[in-house]
Each structure stands twice: as C-alpha cells, then as structure tokens.
Image (cartoon, rainbow over all chains, first blue to last red; front, side, top):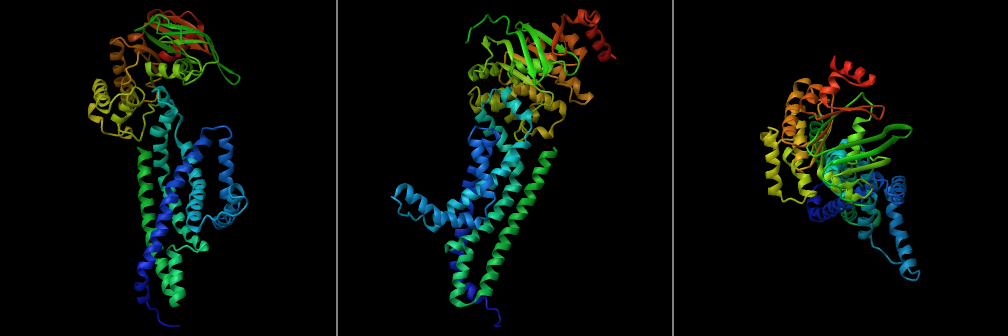
Length: 230
Length: 250
C-alpha cells in the first residue's frame, strides 16, 4: 500500500466544502421544519384533538418503525408514481433528489422531535396551566408564552442530541447520488483513487462537528439542571 | 345568557354541585359575597373548600347550580369565562409562578396579552404592585431565586396587576416555611384593609379573626356553618365545627 498523501485532500477542499454546506443546509432545514411539524404533532396529541391526535400518533409510530434509508427510497420512487397518478393521468412526476432529501428528512425528523416534545409537555405541572387560566390567558397564549418555552428549555439537550444524529444521517443522501460531504468525498475518491485519505478527512470533519455539538449538549444539560433545581 | 345583576352581590352561588366520579365534592352550596366582603373558608381536608373557590373562576367546572360573578353567569361560554377570569385574581398554594420568566415578566404577561396593555404601561403597573408587596428590587430575578414567602408575594402582585374586583386565595400559606407565613399574611391584611373583596381558604385562624367578615365552615362538600368570626370561633353551632376548631387551635 502506498503512503498516505493528504495533498489530494487540499486540492479537493473547495469541493468538499460545497458538500459540507449541503449537509449543513439539509440539517438546518430538517431541524427547523421537523421541529415546527413535530411540535404540531405533539400538540394535537397533548390536546387530544379528535381524529388529528390519532393520525399524529399513527404517523409517528409508522415513521419511527421504518429505517430512514427506506423512507428515502420510498419517497424517491413512490411519490412520483402517486403524484403522477393523482395529477398527471398516471404518468410519473419526478420529484428530484434534492427535494426528496429535504422533504424526507423534515418529515422523518418531525416524528422524532414530536416524541421528545410530547414527553416535555408532560413535564410541565398542572399548576402552570391553572395559573395561566386564572390570568385569563387563552389556550393559544398559554402554550405560546407559558408552556412551550418551558418545554423547549427542558428538552433542548435531547433535541440537540437528536439533531447531531440527524446531521450524521444526512450522509444517507448518497443513495440519491447527492453531493453532501460524504458524496463529495466519494466522488473525488473515485477520480483519484485516494479513498483512505478522503474518508479519513470526512470522518475527522464529522468528529470535530459532532464533538463540539456534544459539548454544547453538556452545557445545556447543566443549565437546565440548574434551572430545575432553583 | 348574560343577564346583568346588580353589582351587589359580586358573587352569587346557588345550589352548586360538583362530582369527581363518584365523589360528591360540593353538595348544594349557596353563597353570596358582597363587594368588599372578606370571606374565610375553612374545614377539614377534602371538605370541598378549595373546589368551591376554584369553581368561581372555572379552574374546576361545576356540574349543576348557578354561579354568577360580577354580572356574568358562568357557563361553558368561553367569552364569559374569560371575562370572569379578568375580574377574578387567584393565588395558589404552590405559587405557580412561571419559572422561565423574570418577576417583572410574570407580572406583565397577563395584563399585556389579556388586557391589551402596552409594555411600558404594564411594567409601570407591575412595579407599582411589586412595591406594594415590598419586593420591587427583585423584579429582574427569576422565581427560583426567591424565597417561598417572596414568591407568594409576587404571585399576589401578579394577580393584582390584572386589577381584579375579587381575589381568591387557595391556602396561600400552607406551602410556606413558618417564618415566611407572616410576611404573606401581612400583605393580605393590607389588601383587605384597602377594601378588596376576598375569598380565602386558610387554616390561619388568627388571620381569619383579624380580617374576616364571615367564616364559612365546610365538611364533606357541604356548607355546614356560616357566621361572623367572633361567633364562629367562640360558639360554633355544629359538633363538626367544634371538633375541627379544637384540632386547629391546639
């Protein structure tokens, strides 16, 4: 085996950087969209909204029992068929890899975030609702100003942990031939044959980003612990 | 329907009943409270005294009977409920301050969101009532940084910021360390002296003697006795009240 030559990595840096940007963008979009949708899924269950609560529960159970890579595949192959059957006289309507990735990750993460938030909602005491009621705050105002801020505060370490997993999972978009960090590295590696250097670099990047984020989780945990103690 | 009644009485309960499953929590309770009156409600635990005052602002809903508060009849109508809650302040045993908000924010959130006050006006009002309960210097802190007695005084100020016509107190000193009971009771005495209409569930018999116009004794969901504090404490009519007073006073 040849000695390691990391000069190839330096040449590939601009391309890898583009890949990393896509990974980060996908993570950010899935985080925001997943959190908004997940909060909705948790709230309809918490408020026991008829029909919607059962639908949300079923959706979360379904998504959480299917591997992410399967969801990506199904979305990529099935949705064009369904969309075509619905809107295009049965001719498939391709969704495209990028849109598939953004939609799938958002919908997938929503299920996981909703479970975290649902547990968080149960941690807020009855007295908080009673105090908000007694102050004549509406249900919407109560959740927006009183309940959800406390839920996000309590669950922030778990939400961030889940987001670290999400960031790692974005590498699965290689099955859609997208150029995320892993995709970029593998494309370069196929050209120059320097698989080991490229994948070592990618691993190092993931390591640095994820350990830094984990440090942040530890800080958040400490802060929420102090907040609940006082 | 919204049939306006004369402002006297502020609160009128007529044959109110409440069940928790098979447990009959309130049995045909009737009560009238005039403006400015101070009513003390006492009785053994599980007698329905907390349930009674929690029905007045619909933290609990009654099953039958009629509750009129400040001219509004309490039904399922959310507009009436909201109107009543704006006029009725409540102080809880466990304070129930919002832990993620500063003391000032605790006091301004409801006036701003429910009464529609501007930020500056709401803060000015909050500082006024925080000064009244003698903790204006704590306005920037969080509830968890305050003692129990201070937290309960904030809770009183928070309720007052809505400028209610009636204040409900649900065992406001029961969760406090003994040395903090007095500071909260002193605040409540001041409030009483200013003419606030008050309904207070408490076991503080000294406070009851000092401020009450009437004492109501409840047991097993029923209003057993209703009397001026002097008469109630020196000469309770029912054996159950006598028994209760012996236990509380010793």
